[in-house]
Length: 223
Image (cartoon, rainbow, N blue to C red):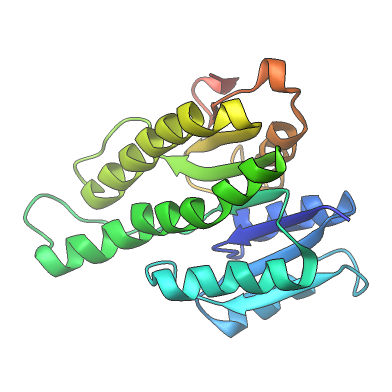
């Protein structure tokens, strides 16, 4: 049975992505900082029979992230899909954050993705296939969301670098850039956005997209 892991499985995109892959017959790994969030995501899956691994892990804590991924692997093997969906979303402008708070934002928005990739991508490459997707955003930097703008620029660069390194080994590294506030029943419905992750995983190697942009202004486009 194929497996999909979502790191940062919150009530919006994360849970919607887990539900999409569960419906496609995947075992799912649900990882979030709080047990209440993980349990809520489990209840949102399509039926109690979906094989699932639940773990609490702070995305900014490398040991916790690696332990959560290893726990899924012990039960279900190396996942076919890993989605890094964790982010620290806060309103801040130049001068609002001290050094520690900038480091805290960067550790969630970027370093957690690096930790996850460093753990799973070599395993996927050794097997010869896999998909690693990061949830992006802020295609244009905002002075009112400075730490998030910097973080999303960072993961965009990370995707580019990892794609260059791992695509030759059969591993698809990509991002889904969400250019707007996620809310059910809008142009940014999490269920609609989740379909991008499924499509990225299903793409043939000859036509891999490195980035899909979900945008009200520009429509839904790939790059």
